[in-house]
Length: 106
View 1 (cartoon, helix red, strand yellow):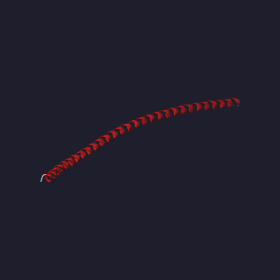
View 2: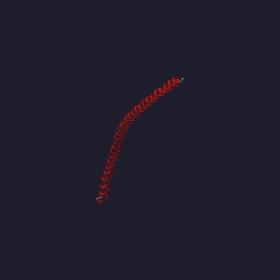
View 3: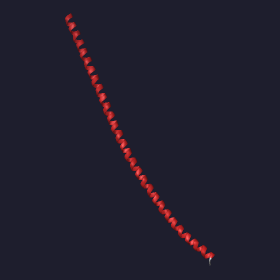
View 4: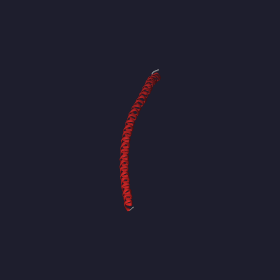
């Protein structure tokens, strides 16, 4: 009976060691999976940042081009208005000279 108890105890010890080894192996595998997931997540974040930076640069470039186009339109309209005013002023100046001349030299 005592031999049987020792055998049972030895079986329990072996089983405990086997379970401890399985637990350690599972822990190592879990650690490896977590590390792999973290590396993949970091890679995805890098790709997302790069895509966001590219999109920002493209949008900024388009906005700058649109701003330049609008600025040129405004400047062109202002030039046209200034030219029209200058022409009217020239015409008014000529009429003013005529009126002055008529009054001075009847």
